[in-house]
Length: 148
Image 1 (cartoon, rainbow, N blue to C red):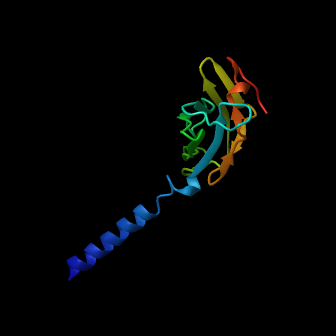
Image 2 (tube, rainbow, N blue to C red):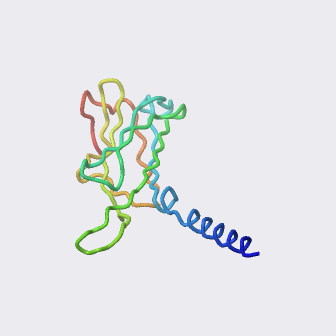
Image 3 (tube, rainbow, N blue to C red):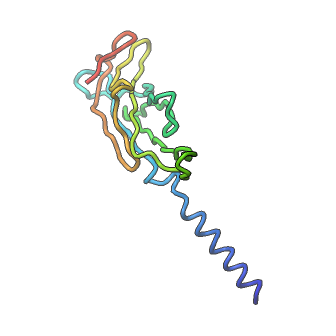
């Protein structure tokens, strides 16, 4: 009987620990999406275009990443927010950042289109979804690109 109760208590504790993990949940993720077309009329989707999330090298909250547009010309990023290290002076534990500035650039061949530079960049927050404006490959400049 004691073994059964002990096993139930241990299993309940394990379920509580696993169920309370906030990392990887919607409250720690930001979603970023957009569409790229091949033509100025924005009728033909551009597949395989690289889109890079640019993050400050000093940031520990989110990580840089590169994704590619799908057959519909859509790119989709899941931006994971990570907790910050404890503050030794204040004696506090880990904490989640509330926002982060990021840049976004798309690349095609030797050209690129800069949605936003890192500074000031887009301000992203956990739990949000950011939809950027549609663009086409005619906007891609040699090496730099434009911003809106």
